[in-house]
Amino acid sequence: MTDATRDPSTADWPLFEVFIRSRSGLEHKHVGSLHAADARMAVEHARDVYTRRQEGVSIWVVRSVDIVASDPEEADALFEPARDKVYRHPTFYAIPDEVKNL
Amino acid sequence: MYTQALDTHGREPVPAPAADGSEAAARFQARIDAEEKIEPKDWMPDAYRQTLIRQISQHAHSEIVGMLPEGNWITRAPTLRRKAVLIAKVQDEGGHGMYLYSAAETLGISRAQMLEQLLSGAAKYSSIFNYPTLTWADVGAIGWLVDGAAIMNQIPICRCSYGPYARAMVRICKEESFHQRQGFEIMLRLAQGSPAQRVMAQDALDRWWWPSIMMFGPSDADSKHTAQSMRWKIKRFSNDELRQKFIDITVPQARFLGLTIPDPALRWDEALQHFVIGPIDWNEFHAVLKGNGPCNRERLEARRAAHEAGAWVRAAAAAHAVKQAVRERAGSAGQARQA
Image 1 (cartoon, each protein chain N blue to C red):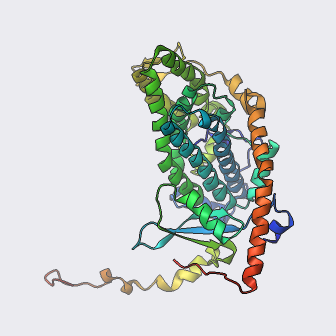
Image 2 (image 1 turned 45 degrees about the vertical axis):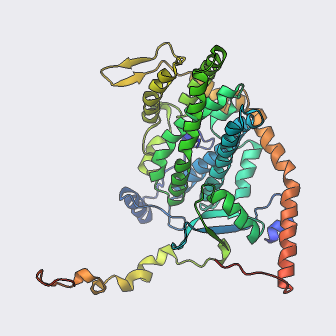
């Protein structure tokens, strides 16, 4: 952003992540990213870049710098607590075949 | 739409595979072997990163430069329908460039850097776009042959080990099929038209056949990056394998059109169950890559002119964004958008 004001014709515009709801009833899904001078332009560019064939009914754009992400290097530690809790899945429980509707 | 075996002609030396044999490198290769996707923040060998940056940015440049030969015919398309189709196709190519630049940026290169490499002439793009579009039939031949060759190259990249590149390619391949079909339809209409139109169609095939065949890159014997790219699952098939596939499906299509492939040595080999072509003129290929094709200079000049002519738009958009941000901070109508 500050770069863009310093040298407006050559520096990159801020990066936005684009999320599209393909039809109502479905969640917005990440589809990619693009550069735009501001959020409004990002929405308009997202329409042209990601919905040329009616792929969406709604667009979200978020500045990429505003996204906080987990660290892949620490994925093991982060997701470890769920690893030994197989009892959270229905298949963990042995039920006799004769019993129906469980 | 338009990669040629782009990994095969980078100017920079072949990146040395990670010589450290480190634990990280071994783990990385194990993930690739298990068909896991690599994502931007994952550890990757520097040579893998550099190879992808080169290949994806060259691919993106090809899409952007690829707009020029076809854009040449937008104002002269023979009907309103053809014109609408051609505009949509050229717009798609621009979109494909955008997907690919975004994918390359996840590897740590900026959009501005890539643009600079294209405009300065340092970057490569597909050699096919350095040929001129002399007649309307060329628009048909490009869709049919050039997009056809591109599809052949790109479908395997949908399974590339690098997630963002693979995802961009899925999107691109979905959009590509109309490009090829509209091109074949143009050729079909001309081939069924007046004698002059048939001559025009044949002339376009005569000029675009060999450059399309060359889009698959050097033959396997001379392709220096293939083995490493295959190990990294960036590439799934060799240049010659893809080229042969393209020839086998395209020759019958040309026959359907009643056109003649400009290769007197072309023959069906019963034992191989393949069409066998005559020798490829690799001198021409290398000359075009080096910048001595018919339109190399014109293409870059057109890109530079467009970039310079757009400078005031970029400056105005940036100034507008700053003004809006100041106003919003001042508490005036900064409307939060909610979906």
